[in-house]
Length: 360
Image (cartoon, rainbow, N blue to C red; front, side, top):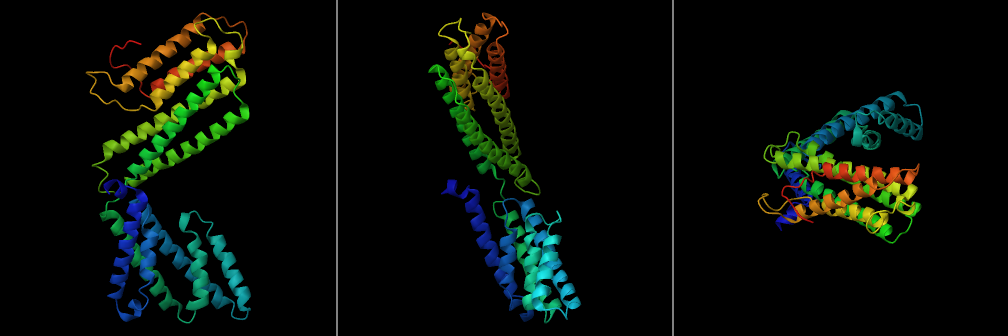
């Protein structure tokens, strides 16, 4: 049950339902001129319940401002076009509203300009001022309640979503590396379209991870829980950046293998062959990627220590292969060197330093 409550969509559901109910009850307490239209208040509450407090506040004032702008635009055009057929008046209002929506001021709330303009011209022209007060005023009231509920009721930091996205990206990146290794062990040449598609999948996962990490930073603004969870938020930011850097390096590494095929170009002077040495390096890097945390205080080795030691040994074998090879203008040799550098930099980005002397 606790784990379910940590899901962002569950928290938003609870906040939206509570904010809408409270907005309705508060609106009913107002004078009849407003309470008769209490249903506008829950609308504002729902608008303002966003994933973060900063987003809630932004959605609240931008929505109300867009609504008032649409109302004002509709009234102005209506007063100036009494002699024009209604169809042309509405068309002109919508056209102008869409133009106004292009202002960056509105962001995601831009569509409220045209919606409010059409609403005013269809049902509010009899008494524009009174209608604007009821609609915009009650929407603002509901939005304020939505922001208040978002702030007080487990204000979201979006940590759970970010952790999930980082874990998913780690898993995809790890599988990517292992699949390359399997291809090399089979002595096959990586298929360009296949790996382009895999790189595309990884890019999409990275975009989702970056978005989730950015949302954590935005969620900390004006959030009373931010200080308590500051350390974890910083860890998430650093972990996301590390995985991002490794993914970029792995993308370059994959391109080198696909283009130059160093394991098929005669550089085969060490142990089981170039393909196997490369595969071991990539497999060991994959293991470090999907084993991100230590489980001991460093006094005894853990699984991450073992994977780091294995990766260091595999990288050593790859470097030894390079030292025992000659360039002879073979592009495969330079690609092999670039792969070795890429693996080393990836391990550094993952902070994969050996804490204890380890034997392999």
